[in-house]
Each structure stands twice: as structure tokens, then as C-alpha cells.
Length: 301
Image 1 (cartoon, rainbow, N blue to C red):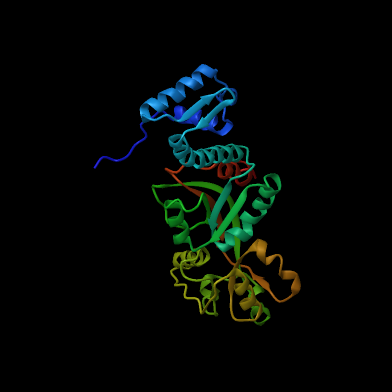
Image 2: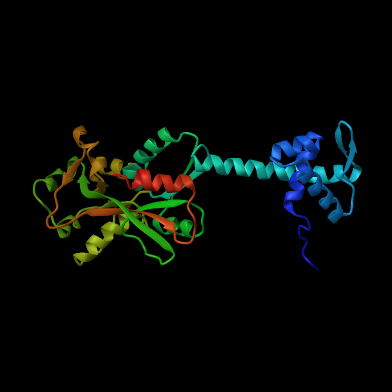
């Protein structure tokens, strides 16, 4: 069975649409910026190809025949959708509409994305922002499936030939404790020393857990946290309640040190820098909003 296809030139349908909308060939020609004979010819060729009469001509303009009305009832909503789509595209180009989809981890949102979004939304308030939070492996899969425009992750994370990675910034992690373990802050400590105490971490598969595990592995140690919690806020609460040693970005720790119930542990001969990357699908075009957010806000430090 042959698949159905459009038999007539779409420009003929456009001429029909505006003539039916205005009940006038002259008005249709004016809106289309065409001559009246051109519009009349397009409608005549459409009638010939469909083998029907679509309009009745009279002195005041035109009116639809029974067949013309049947076609109008299908064409009118279709052209409305086309015109709406064109308008949305124009708005999107000017960032007067459209959307920006971002997926990342909780830490990336807190340390980097939200301040950038604050600037972006102030400049482009009509762009709809959609943020999702996920573990690293899920974030990358969402990029591959086209379920997000961009992702932002802090290393380490798996690479992929089907993804683009652009470095945007770095953060420092640090170990922190509550009052019970404050003595650990008196001098620089090694990971071997810290491993003797209870550790608090986000779940296996989270970017922070992967990072700390890699640091321990470089020192020939295994990272086996005694307590796993799902959010950075819970890490903070666990540390402040003396449940063990936690890991947090230094920017986050700075907000809590003055309270007197969290303390930073100095570490010896250990770099805890983490690089952040914006990740996009290599074969997926970016929306104007996503491209603008990357070029003017993420990469403009």
C-alpha cells in the first residue's frame, strides 16, 4: 500500500488559506505580497489538482463551496500550527521565548549553575528554564538521548566519542568535621590518617563519591564511607552532628565555618581541585537559548 503524500504545492494551500480566511482574493494577495492574478492562478491550480471547485466567485469576494469548506476545516488548524511554530522560532532566536533544559548534579547546581542562571534569567526572563538533578551516569545518558540541552559536571566522569566536553571552571573540595573531631584540624593530615575515622559521603555513583574514591585509590586506599546520604545538605547536617568526616566544596564550607560547628581539615600533599565541564551531544544542534547560555554566561568568566 502506497504511503499518502501531499499532491499539491504547499504554496497553493497558502493562497487558499488566506483567500478563505479573508473571503477575498484581493485581501489574500495583499497579505501574501503577491499580485491578484498570482493568487488566483495558485487557487485554480489547486482546484485542478484536487479536481474540485473550492470557491464561488461573486462581486463582494469569494465564498467556500461544500468541498472548499471541508478542506478549510483541515487546513485552518494546520496553518495555525505552522504560523505558531514560526513565531516561536523567531522568539527563540531573539530569546523572547523558548526553553533551556539543564541536567546536572546537586553540587554543580549549588557551586556554579544557579549563579549563572540568576544572570541569564535577569537578561532573558521569557526563556523557560527546566532543571533536573541526577547522578553522573544518568546525566550523560540524558545528553545522549536528547532529553536535555546541556549538562554540567565536575570530573571525574566517563568519556564518550558522541559527546562534546568544554572546560568552564574549577572548584576545590575539602574535608570537614564537627566539634567532636576538631582535633584533626590541628595539623595537615594524610588520607591514611583520615581513613581511620568515620566518613560521610553522598551515594556511590555521585560525582563527589567518585572523586574521593579516586583520591583514596591513588594512595592505595579504599574509600568505604560509613554513612551515605543523598544530598549536600544532609552531609552538612551529618558533619555538624559529629557523625564523621565529610567532603564539601570550599565555597560551601565558607558559609558554615563562622557558626563554630564545622571545621576544615588541612591535608598534606594532596590536590583536591575539580574541573567542571559543560557537556553537549556531538550530533545534536543547540537551541539559541542553550548556545547563548554557554557562550555568554558559562564561558564568560
